[in-house]
Length: 407
Image (spheres, rainbow, N blue to C red):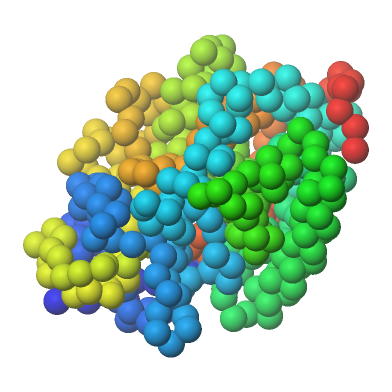
């Protein structure tokens, strides 16, 4: 058995994840670490794809005899998230409840709203010539859309965003993480109130739809509704904002490529896929073996925890030419940033739209932004999401445009 000191929660991994992943791919693509109770790290594209598509052998959720559980993260998260932490056939009953709201056609209808929200956010700082592009743009836009889709007050976006960010970039068991958990409990209290209100008086929002939906002929419990809504919040609020921050920081350092996108906005969708590959906002997810099996020539026993490193797969030299370079027109680009198999990210269409709209507006209205790299702060731990705490910039002041959105 090949062992490693791999710890995706560590500061070292946050700083050097590309190098650490590269070493694992080259020397021990199926390696065992004792971190967080012990688990296997998969770093090759083909091995990860095989596991992600085998839901019979590799489970996304298990309840253990001692009362604990496994899930899609290592260690398991404080709250179960449905349906990503479900296996077939149960998984399909819940996934189909969400498919309609996240289909390409449904998501496309949100573009005018997103454009308005983005305009509103930029208007708030464009005259000043300076801003933190995380707190003023990359965080509010996804958070506001997520709350609007669910049917929660958009005025609460800052609280939801701050708490969600803190939960993913602080270490489990730390005081900061405990404080974020307390904040999540407060947010879920509001969700519970909204569930009760929509049960009595439905509206045209996702919470109303879920409250009145049936699974196998029965309405869902409040606890199950919370598990679904939690996933939508976590998935919607943090990941796209992290990708936006990473891409904007990279474009600052690569002005010729920024000018290229400004001159040819039609390239942005292809560039989006490359930024997804290169930055891998969600570095990986976990599975648990249900029986003895072999992956990449390594025998695994039943009950083993396995980490699928999307971020490593996205740099596999056997799949991607020049993987260490950003190639804005890379095609094909079969990155694993949205996962693979039945659990592939439900919100991928939303993420792509949010990213495109924000990037288009930044390139149009803040074309000469300069990042204050000395004060920009990346997440200190990237085990769950790889993003930015702050991204301060300066730019030539511009004029407010006005929008139909208001908080």
